[in-house]
Length: 156
Image 1 (tube, rainbow, N blue to C red):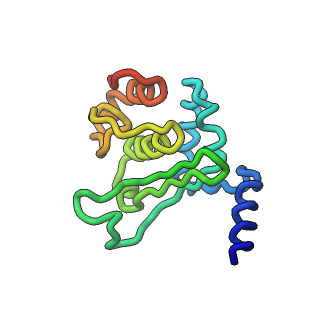
Image 2: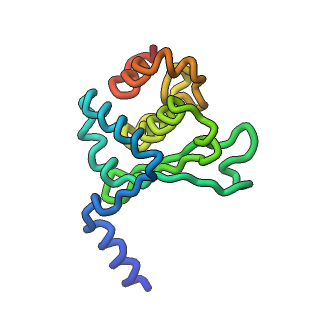
Image 3: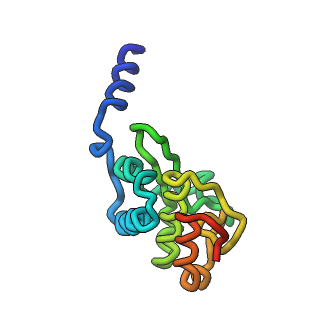
């Protein structure tokens, strides 16, 4: 059994990471926008391998700790800066009731954690704010929020 585990780990570390990519069709357009912004702000180096090794999909398990009450989780991510995939799970219920700009902000937020290694930001004008940012803020301040995510500085 130990030999099998070691062989599996060896395979994971030797496998071309491009073969591991899976992104749900609904999420893909937002990932592509994030990739374009990575290039625009010269963050391609930080993002390329992780985005090419991305597993992004939805979780829908009703009644789980992930989506109970007002404190439900809209998304979560984990990124390893090796050959293992960057994993992003998005809450299907949240996604279905969100506007296009809220969906984009959610994808950027989760990729901000896993690709750019960003923590939560206490400013409600930041993509990395720990809670959902209202639609009107996103629409008014999107460009500044993206700049803050990729280039740093103060939001807005």
